[in-house]
Image (cartoon, rainbow, N blue to C red; front, side):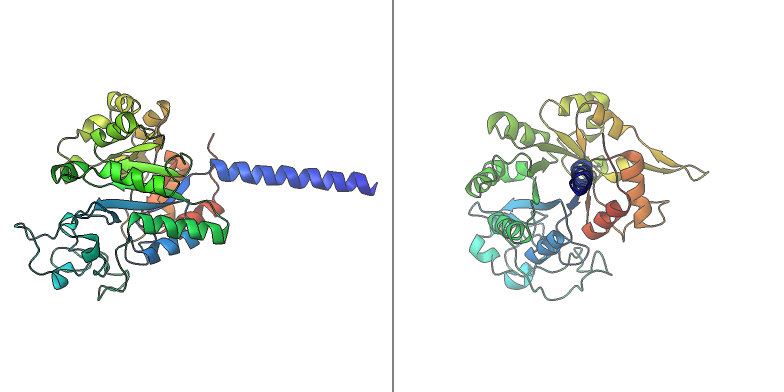
Length: 344
């Protein structure tokens, strides 16, 4: 009798464990946008460590190159809105008044301190976040950030993904640099070049993604980012077309998913308060493409959305996205724990 009961308990526990594993495997992914950037200055190692501790499935790395071709983690090709470059190197701006990362060697970049993001007038973009003041942290290289994440994976018994964006590949090409090749070299050095279950590569430039897939022959999954055409992100890319069924057919030829702006999916609410959604997610899924929209911020809600949980509910439960980029990975992780989403 005792053996029979123990066997029953063992079977029940095994089924429960497998169910939990399957649930976790099929749940949407939480991508820490520039790290836990809602709490610490973006793209610093401290922000990435916090995101890791908050349970992000993937941590994003925006990458640009230094003058000596070293991939560093920085959202912009400019240094002036997140570092003290103007104080340390006051005479190094170009004619447009901006300080370009590619004009500085890695040795020079290491002297910079990163602060909370400011606009070109020196005002905090998000006033309620980490205080805008003297920077306490430096600009990491891509290699250093991978070492940090891999080290924390080992010490915390996790397997956290990298989500790397190639910033302005045409700009880098005009400056004589091949950003795609440099990134793949770092990934190969760190043992991540073949980890297709742990690394995404994303870019707004479709030609860069085609180059990665067809010329450099990376096996890593590629994500086509989709901007709003009014932003001027890349005038050579037709973002309206990429959202169409024909455009998605084209994307499916070289990429594995799309990264649209959240307002390309959420279209507001009707007069009666019902959520209006585009067909973009369904159209992408019909072509086997994953959908990872950006950027979900507690302090920057879309029109008609009352709070962050409602925003997450719209995208996870109604739009059925496969994951999303957020400055607040802890809030997205808590939401999914309390409101499980099981994808087919």
